[in-house]
Every structure is written in structure tokens, then in C-alpha cells.
Image 1 (tube, rainbow, N blue to C red):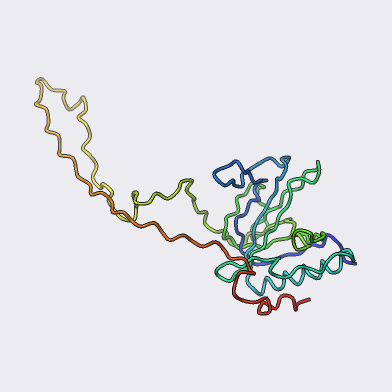
Image 2: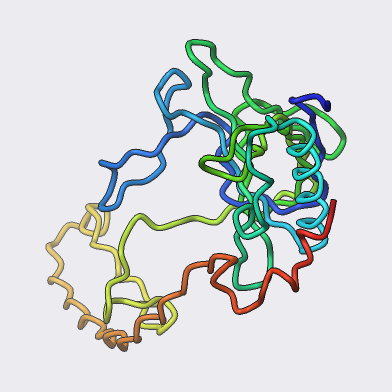
Length: 253
């Protein structure tokens, strides 16, 4: 029987939505629909997490490793390993998505945060902020569990090596306002108003006549721009009109 805590390096994949600089948890009271927020590692539900984006070839290789590990470590009474549709999600660009996590604690014992290294294997601070879209190598632990919920093998995040760091994108906290100001449509004032006279300007023996105020510059109101079309969320693998037979996942291993 194989080791139940086998480790695996997943190479040259794209990190999406990394939250590994500290622990986070989902807060249902945050915002209208709830969102993931920073938290203490001692909080219930705390975890480190990151979604990995893989090509089909990478996904097939990972699926094979997970299936082999599950098959050689599971209880004989457990069901067979899950189908690919229950392991991966497929995005609109044909990339395969899978999540790796590590709980902030097990019972009362805190876990060791995932370590982060640069391409030269220099360890970075634990609070280094990895950006979404970065290319990474990831060390995970393969942990078998009974697949009552989930596929039967979890990917516990251990280490990350950053190969290419993506530029951080700033996200607005606001909703889109239809018909409001649009910076792409022009309409900025390009001339500055003349400064108000200073006391030195009036330092004279006589009282100068007041200067005529310049007529205010009229700035054309920006044209209303239609709101962008809504982006459809990533489709589940089993909602895409391609059968699992085409994926050939379950013929591997």
C-alpha cells in the first residue's frame, strides 16, 4: 500500500486567486453575497488556498497521479475514484481548474503556512503577495479520504516556487454606474485656472484696480457609454458539450 501522504510537484501551471500570504475564511455577512476575508489562523474555517489552471495534458497527468494514489490507499469498501468532471472545472478557454488548500489548523494545532520561493530558490517572506496569473511550480500533499463529498484525494498546499510573477491588477470596490463618467470618452479639463492673487501682488503704494475674472472654461459633458456585456461564468466541465470520452481521462491509470 502506498504512503497516504505522498507529495507531488505540479510544474509550470498558472496560479489563480492565490490566498497564501495569510489565512482567509468565507464571511457570509461581508457584502451582499458574502466574500472571502483575511482572518486569524485560529478562526474556524481558516485556510490557505489557490486555484491552479492547467492545460489538458497537465490535467491528464495530475488526474492519473491522483487516481493511482487513491486506488492504492483507499479503504476497500470505498467507491472507485471520481470521474474527471468531479475533479476539474473547465473554463471558457479550455483550461482545467483545480483547487489546492491547506487548513489554518487541525483541531487546536496550527498548520505550517505554505512556503514561497523565487525561481532561484530563495525563500520569500511568509506574507509575500503572490498575484493571480503568475506561473508557478507547486508542491502538494496527496491525501486520501472517503469520497462522500469531493473526489477522494485532496491537494494540500505545501510550497510554491514563483517562476513568473504577474503584474498586480487593482480591483474597484464599486458597482458599475450606467451612463456615468467614462475616462475613455474624454472630457477632461486640460487647462488650470489662474492662481488667486497673492499679498505680494498688492504690495504697492496705491490700491490696484481689481482684476477681471477670466470666464470659466466650459467642459463638454462626457458621452454616455453603454455598459459592457456581462461575462458568463466559467462553465462546469459536465456542462460543456463535449463528452468525457473525448477527454480520455478515465482511460489513464
